[in-house]
Image (cartoon, rainbow, N blue to C red):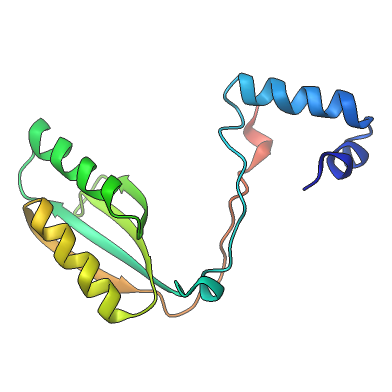
Length: 136
């Protein structure tokens, strides 16, 4: 959203609004500004969620795994979980064959006890917006 539009929405002129945005960036509240792309229009319309069970629970394994997922651009998000699955990966690719290639690259880089793939059939909600009602 352009700064002028934000300023208008919050009742400020452009310059003070811009300063407040810069202060939020300096404070680390705003981590980065990005363009949100349409995955289908860049030939990355297939989303795969991958549940991973660690090969072993050790610091060196975690370091290897963390490096591996950082190096694979199709892996867009990674979360460490509680429960049956240790890690959840979000992977975006054009098709199943491309996912298979990502899978093969991933298992070459780290040892896993189990890998389970779940192909998204429909996106019902996707947002980068965070709930602001909890902010101080």
